[in-house]
Amino acid sequence: MARDTRLDRRTFVKTAATATALTGIAGCLGGGGGDNDDENGDDGGDTEFDGWFDNVGNFDGVADHTGESEVTVTVGAQGNGGAFAFDPPAIRVDAGTTVVWEWTGSGGSHNVVAEDGSFESDLVGSEGHTFDHTFDATGTTKYVCTPHEQQGMRGAVVVE
Image 1 (cartoon, rainbow, N blue to C red):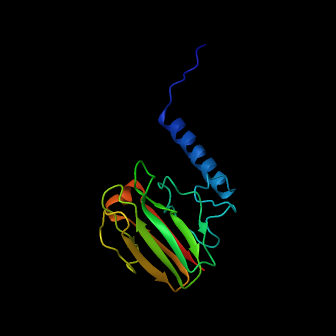
Image 2: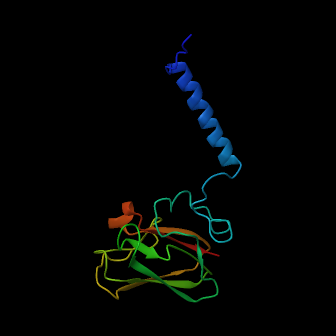
């Protein structure tokens, strides 16, 4: 007797529900990919980026620059399929630290715009241009290059 191997609607729904439940259980057990993990196995201590770096090709954790009074971030670094990255994309600093963004001159015109509106640079394409901001309050500030945000040109400053 031949077995009917057609997938009816009821079988499909049951199979999809089981797969969804198993995926949820794996996430609860810590089985997710952990795209935002740094070398310590977390995404920057108490900081949660909520997927902010999901499509950022050069993100590999939060660079610790605590103890430094000034930190430089490259604008127009190689990443995300061209010169469309901040390097490093995520940094940890102490309150009172000045972050200086310095343009490479590659990848066209870039800017640095805080998601919360706390700072915004001009749109510039020239090498050596700089923009700085001093971070006085603790917390996390996410920022983008508005023309290249969809390509993954995103960054964050975590202030302790």
